Image (cartoon, rainbow, N blue to C red; front, top):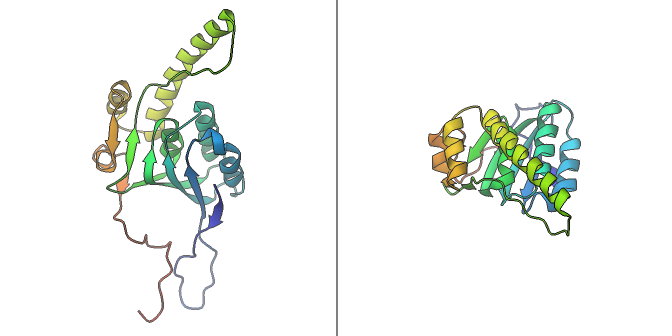
Length: 194
């Protein structure tokens, strides 16, 4: 989960200009890398820009909410690019990005939240967790629709049916834009004289 500065975009002759946006890779389970991702986001000036590359099966819904809060509360102008998979809890920070980019090969899994406990807990605590979990699931589904800002009914259907969605499906629903697998303008400096 390393963050680095992107290559500066081509500038006018003699104009140094600032470097490109910070690039952040979200790989694997969100919860396993939360401190790295959070640190990278905290390193961006409020109102600054970043590019977040996603290849994640999801993870903790609390981590997802925290990342959404950091992106939105700090006014970060994030571009989310799904290079592989963006599923489950990883959908929330992707949806929080102002610009959402997919390839023809990007994959998304929408599903209801799953409750898993590896701890030995008493019946009272389990009952409270069950109540909390039901509320959290409803709130997270509403939040996901709000973040995407469109196709709320379609997203709800995808969640209820445990739907695998392609990059093309996301574009068709108006939730992302498609890019071909070639260098993105502004990320790769052009060589002068070519």
